[in-house]
Image 1 (cartoon, rainbow, N blue to C red):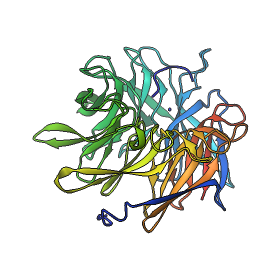
Image 2 (tube, one colour):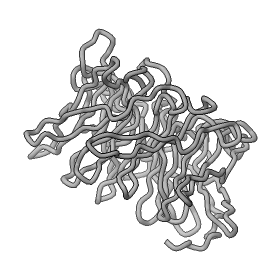
Image 3 (cartoon, rainbow, N blue to C red):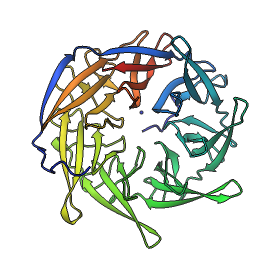
Image 4 (spheres, rainbow, N blue to C red):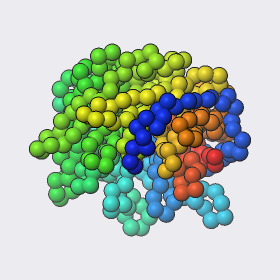
Length: 412
């Protein structure tokens, strides 16, 4: 949660063994290499990268930082940046936009960005806007290499929500969906929809006002399944106050919400902060705490008959030199291997990149990289994104030569 300004195909046989066996490797497996693509200086280029990265069709990377940019004497308001592969090797960083804050602009972007079909970028800021409770913004290319930013919605803090925290997602009709940590009818967060109204305007509607029964304070993004249903996690609330998984189905012009899993704390896990990843027909996610060692879990939810979902813990974090307290989304490849990062733990205590490698009915955890301080990235924020060759890309919120974060690549 980021509520302070200081600088987070077919069923393969449902039982495919979800008698999954796990083995944790305490050291990096052989062959992985990590390299730093860009080190943030903390100035106009940005500081403190947050959220997951995305690729465009040309192989450029885009992301956000929650500080840096405008020199305002307080560390800056954050930037949206692009990393472009340079001829002959290396990457070049360009700050596409530096947030200004105040009542007319957002500040502290905290969920990455997403493209629309026309090549515009959209994201949310945790603060700023007309009520200093967050915004949704659009960045449009000018055609001459620049980008123009505009705020398309400012949260007011009442029924509409406040402090958007996760990323955004589009549906096929061009509507945007996201979450706020607070606000709504019960002041426990919302799931919202932004719809274009013509003439460049947008209209916001709350499709779920979170409550104790549904789960409270959603901090991750929402995700669609192939049938158009929406899913997300609530970080607390539910019958055990340990969080829930929510599904929203659209029928007869209305979104209908239901809880498909309530976390029980203890071995079941608690505090699902990261949102979910969908790979037909299952949902994958993490809990920040709980599990065998109390340091979080990776889990899968499997749909069954009668709308009942079954949850399985895939990995318990915290044993040996394992990662701790995962709060970032998972990424899957086409064969079902699972990749992710933890913001702390690993052999050096500054976070770890891991793979849960699938072999038949067994998942084995591989430690891909232990993040370090100094020139390495540290405290990875956001998940990882895979390129076509299966290499991983992500960002560390701290570390790097200037302590302002870095973007990394891991070749597994």
